[in-house]
Image (cartoon, rainbow over all chains, first blue to last red):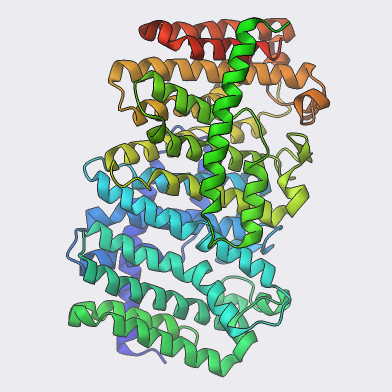
Length: 298
Length: 298
């Protein structure tokens, strides 16, 4: 049963998500020199909804570190572009072969594989274009590019996808699953927090605190995503469920069972919350978010 | 018949290409935290040879504008990563469906489609990571990111690919072909020149001259590429030829015929050379390169 705190955080999530969506829509609206069909495919996936967890974290971590929303919005949009590109490519027949994404046909089902691949590539490039547009803060912009590129590439999200694919069918050891989850999911969620810190020009101590929060939150999020896939219904989740088990994917439930996975998710969320210590009650919203992420799957 | 100038420029091309290849190999060698199979796929395509035209242009334009090779090498590597990613994705079954690239199996034939898609994505992210690594020159690094992302994305190379695909089967109008070629090929070649200028912190007048050179060179290059596809053999070119006509692709030969295409290529190369006027004889090597690019298809 949802508590009062859950409802509050859900409302705040929706409000910030709407703010990010407005900014993204305005930014995409300026891409008048793009082929219309390409822009349509990019918009289709960007506008598909979702929690907007990563851009939210950029905004909220920037605010927590005393920064302005205007400074956080470009990296917030950029990381959502990267996340969206990764979903489009993940759904392709050669990868997860998913026909459904957020309750609608996946990009390749709607636009064909060729345009889906290119729409993903185009969102990937757009992320870095957005990050480099603010010419007034070149050292911040350059640090953000470094952060996002490293978290996206072969040592981060894309590397995690490779490990995930190559781990399919093997008996999953919990350490291997943890390593895949960290690369595939947690590293980009950590980068979202760090981008918020960079936008606020946070000092080293604060950067470290939000880094630790982000990494633990990302792990808790992926474990609870595994649990949703194992226990949820397609209607409730908005994408095909049970697919990890079908594909023999390395997941927490497969490695340690449902109950132990629930315990790990809660424990990791508590570790995320503990990392926020230096901020005191100013970080209550981020703490509530960590609990919310885990509760959606319990 | 090859002239003395051709031979000189061919030697200089190979020397600079080898320098870029050594730097790329060293950079890839540092990616020790990447999954080995992913790194293998990235290396396979990066090491596949080719003329290294784009990184060469970064180095040579930087030198022409009085900059140092060390400043030009990161953007040279970055643009080659972007070019390589685009070749991997272009060859995929959903796009050009090419089994052969530079005389070897295409990435998806060697590693499977999933890994080919992810190797391309990983090279794309690596390009921006490389551009943002030099923390001593953040405003140059930020300007380079802006330049490369814009030339790569929907208003540049990726947008050109979308237009190219959607133009297949239509009777090609020469203006439409020119627009596709500019976006798909010439914009990234222009960016190579501009990245060299940025590395050298060139003034506005020099930037404009190398921009104009790069755009014209890029068009001349693509027209001569069309001619190679229409007239060359698979053995000589290292990839399947005649495929543009088979696919009903918008090309110059299809729009205006072989002879007129040859004339356009030469005329465009001369326009590129004329743009180098402000540099005098210091630009002789770039002028020879423009002639060389056209002669390979005549």
